[in-house]
Length: 421
Image (tube, rainbow, N blue to C red):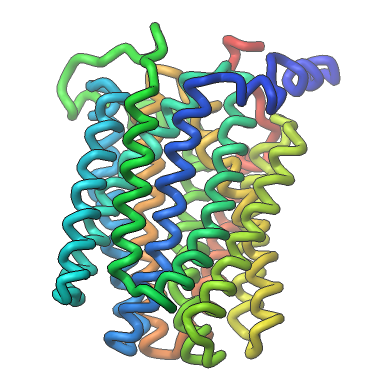
């Protein structure tokens, strides 16, 4: 490809941040993600600390996260198909309303003194069902309300926001657990879901973007599989996602375990450790947002995973608070590179009419982290949390080398869809 063509890729279209934020529908959908992602990270920390206090078992901590992501692995592709067949805006309103009502019920149960592992497990599963809708509905809507040349910066900004909530959520969660308890977390959940629901009602359907499909669910799934059979780039992108979710992301379940069991910390400093990882993720996503170079998207995606795995491996061997925080922040930078590129690469390399289905398959790949958490949880009960993180990240680095060798397209230059070039 010529220099002029590369310049065209980087300069084409209104890709300024200001131009993106002037898009009303983008702002609304983006803010819905900010509200729900804050709750997501707050709850992961809160549940981890409370369950470890109840059971003293790292496996039980990991098992709760398994329950959260299992719905993605089991019905993520189905959610993508449903999103293609029905109005995504109404689907989003329905799901947010259901979660608001559920959070209110859970808060009442907790304030009534009936909180136990079964109630916590039920809350985790229900939240997992809700998160199956994020990629095929909310993030696909984000891709629909912007121009193709804006998809990269839109997803990067969404990741920046997610990373900010990944930083603030655990910090707020640590404060709530210190002074209020898990019942306060459920109450905050109801408030955040109510805010997101109000924003969802304001979103207008973008004319001509979604053409609701006809045909059986099986045929919709078959169409998605056929796209993968002819698109090596998409297969490589999904393979990298599988590695991250099987061997990199699951280590976050061990942060509270290592913080409490190895470092002897209380909930608030454990929240600070988790927030350090989130702060690094924010920095990584901001760096991607500032570059805005489409051609480097695939390399940033793959490089980010390698940083995440390597830094998590080193972190696992730290024995004090400050070095642990430093390496968690560095791991987060790599995770930020990865997260900023994940959905953008799927959307850029998928035909527009297939995006919900591919984002549904992406959710399945994300949901495979349930197996990753099972793996690291069993290892932690067997050889300890630190050694479990060491083993898992080493396995991930080996898998990454094999994927790059099998699908070298994953480190090639990225281009915009042909219709925009």
